[in-house]
Length: 111
Length: 120
Image 1 (cartoon, helix red, strand yellow):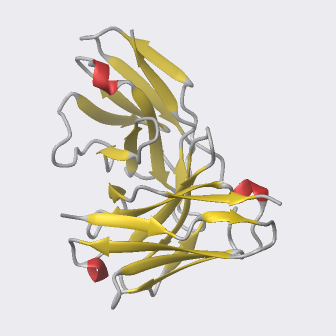
Image 2 (cartoon, rainbow over the protein chains, first blue to last red; image 1 turned 30 degrees about the vertical axis):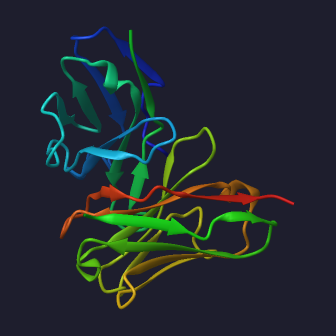
């Protein structure tokens, strides 16, 4: 099972919107609407930001939104803030066998 | 409040075994599927294993199949990860995480992680 492909880095200025892509295959992202997104600050545990493609857990800012088209899922952060600077990982369900696969991770920098 | 606390990490020689624990509190542990995720130093997240709420179903990453066993004791509110035949590439911070209730998705709560270092 290969890792999902994410850009290594994305940057934006405060207030701007950025989008992080997560490209998988027909076996994972394309077949299931079960992509999650996690935010991880250095030295901290990951935090769930989006699940089932576009749902936000309680307490997560509505500046974070998720979507999917074909084999690519996306996380959009609008109104970028300094505290959004972190690593972001997607994760997709992929059915039987080894059922979860993470993305390669994206470092978000707020300029 | 929900808490997950991992323990059992440390330095171990290649080929040896180690058992990690994750003590859960603040929720009905026996209602939830639980997961282990690891992160090698300076690297990305890697899903390792999951176990259903009652322990009847277990799932593993291909990279650990046959060497790692996930288990749980609902009477003790504790999740375990038994790791055998450890390799240097198993060096990582190991996190336990809770699944969203009744859902495939996971990670609404995470532990702080426990570091496993495999080195001679």
